[in-house]
Image (cartoon, rainbow, N blue to C red; front, side, top):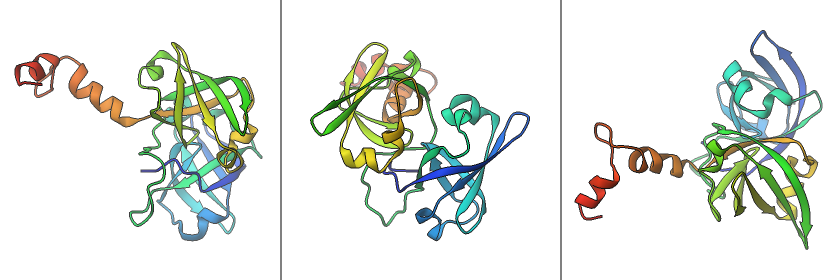
Length: 212
């Protein structure tokens, strides 16, 4: 479990491509202080397991399904990535609940400046858009952000200078793909309330009949 507060920007040092999988070697510094093999690290919002550790880098296996569903497939040597260790129970919860399980990829279609903020307009598939609500939370490449505006097939966020400088947002350009993870609360609501009643599920009729 993660919070969407990026701890460090690392860089891709090596990529070992398999037939349908890959092993990423990622340069880092700050996050390696207390990381051990088997720990989870979110790389651009994708939860990966540490398989090896060196003095200034770590490696993680990426299976085919992860490559297929995320923007990790587009990584190249030297590319910067957002890094966040799994949430510690004794730390502050500064963002929102991020699982590191990407729902899909979005495409940046517009970037513009508004005083001290930078706006990013992102196009996404309807399977992702249905969970995005105005003023709700979303993780973009693992960054916890607030949705400022929602349209039929795209949405916008506004980022402050600190967020931009502390993450890979500063390098993002129009046309690039980003990993998207919507707020998990919406998915649970759909599962137990909106979907037709199945077994012990909750339907609209069930709620009405019980005074809701």
